[in-house]
Image (cartoon, rainbow, N blue to C red; front, side):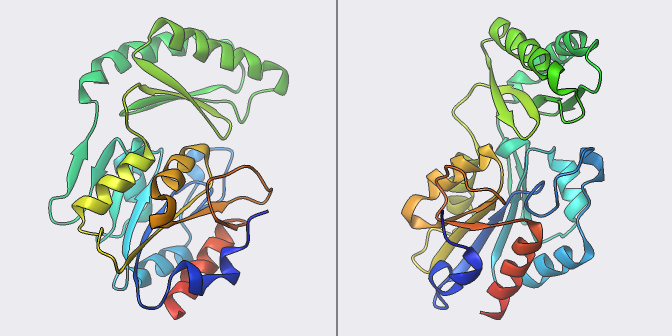
Length: 254
């Protein structure tokens, strides 16, 4: 089992380095909830993030749409990356969009997948700008294979999309060479954070965050948010969003 980040602050963020903090949203800054619209950032977590901004570069990378995650966090000085890094915006005109040519095709496939899921009780289709998500958190366990089969069948008919598994969700997104890891590396370059005295730290709980853990490799630190041990490219762990907040506050004190 990988060690707790709370017990290794000094080696994660040496006092001589300026940290660059990259965070997922759902399951990292907020607990996972049955209805995604109810995942609200607590006042104390927002205060911790605001306190970090003068001392560190901060970016939120989420599977949510860019506008959604930006409104939920609502801190102007932070960089936001929505749709798993496909849609990036930040201060001083920072902006990047990937795969806009796929948008008309996603409109069409959204209707197709919606028809496939229509008879499955509890299944919820969510259209994001750059992806289509089929949520099955509220689906009877015996019906979950039907959700996966529906998504897989649509993906097989549309090879320009790839199927991605998340926490109680299957997602279809453009099949291009881009993910959260590529987004983090792009941010490091475009924010001028490739200097020797900058320490990139990525904190996330989902499978998509593994791309970022791997991309940082030895140049930074990956911290997995999970109560249960699991295979990961991260070097340290935190149990839940409450520990994430504790870690951010410890980082500030350190």
